[in-house]
Length: 140
Image 1 (cartoon, one colour):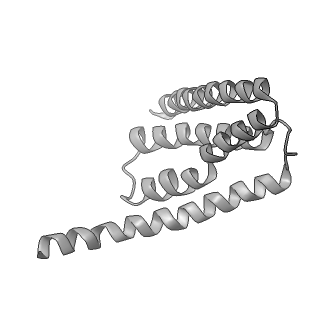
Image 2 (tube, helix red, strand yellow):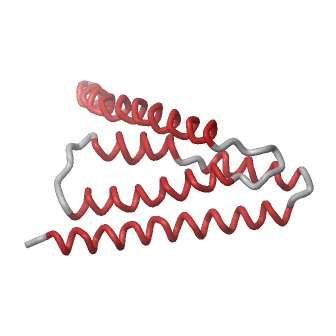
Image 3 (tube, one colour):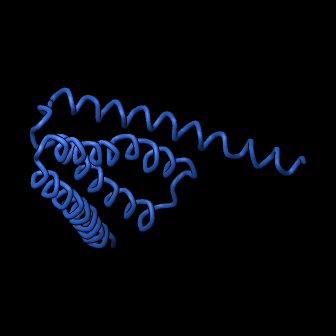
């Protein structure tokens, strides 16, 4: 019983930083939706940009964490899971596709589906690749 209590207490700092980071990321995403509002039947450009930028930042972040330094144990849950998890919005992406299809814009929905997946993968790959090059170049 005592071992279980220690484990539970050990998880609360991570839960707390994920919650704080998620609030920050979701607020940033909400701000982006206010800056770039999307009409109901229009192509969801803001959501696409948020997801692509979030994936690129994740690529940079993971290279820095895994190849440059030993981070604090709460940094990855705070920034990776919390901030970037709250900022990127693949649930909104799915709802956007559903709305486009329901409003008779199935081709646009399909294009959005493919473009988001491809762009997100290219963003994380290219950001990781570029960051690795910068890290390798900056090492003595």
